[in-house]
Image (cartoon, rainbow, N blue to C red; front, side, top):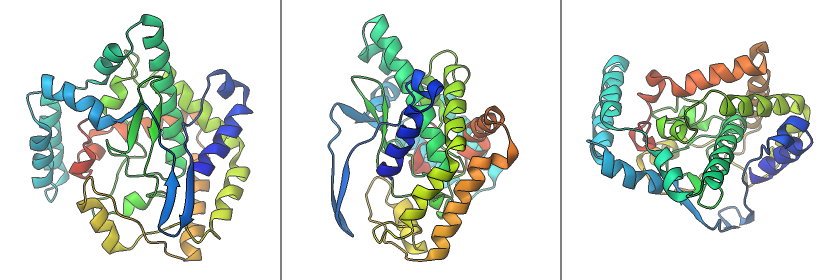
Length: 302
C-alpha cells in the first residue's frame, strides 16, 4: 500500500495545481521479509492522535474517554435513534481540542501557520486517496502527527478496499473527519483550504484512473497481499481494540476483481464533478448518524 501511495505522489507532482499546493501523502518504507514478517521504517518525531488530544480532553472535558466508550458500547445494539442520542450527549460533554495542540506545539506565527496548512492538506490528500482505496481502521492510534511539520502519517494499512464495511460493526464513513480532525483546520473548518485540496486530489486521481487501476491490478498476483479477511478475524480485529492482529491473506481472484471494480466506481463517483463528489464525501464523513453507529473503540467523538 505504501508503494501505491508513492505512485499517487508521483501523479501529484506531475499536476501543476497539486504541485503548487504541495499535495502529497506522507509515506515510510515497509520491506516484507515473508508472509508474516517485515521491516517498517521508524517515523521520528511523531505521536498518535490519541496521545496528542488525550491530555487536552482530560483537562477540558466533563466526560472521561472510558465513560464515553462505555456509553457507546452499551447502546451499540439499540436502534439508530437511541445511538444517535447517546452520541450527541457525549459530544455535548466532549469538545474538540486539536487546535490547542497546534498553538502550544508551534510557538511562532509563521511556523504555526505553515504547520496547520501542512496538516490540512495532508488530511485532505490522505482522505481522498484513502476513500478511493477503501482504507479503514482509521482510529486515533493509526493516525500520527509529525511534531515538526504538522503532517499526518497513516499507519496500519491492512484494512483496505472497504474491508472495514464488512466488520461486525461496519465502518460507515469514507474517512476520518471527526470534530478533532476538523478542529485542526482552523476557523474555516472543512471549507476553503481543506475542500479545495480534496478537489484537486480527486481531480488528479480521476485523471490517472487507468494508471491507478494498472498498479492495483498487479497486486492481484502478490501472495503477501490480503484482499479480504475471514469473519472470525473481522470480529477479533474489532474486539481487540488497540491490540494488533495479522490478517491472513485470502487468495481469491473474485475478491481482488471486486475490490478493483469498487475503486473504479469511486473514481467515477456516479458522474459527479470533483467538487460535488467532495461535498458529498464530507457530508457523509461528518454526518452524526454515521458517526453514532461506529464501533466505540474508533472514538468518533474525538
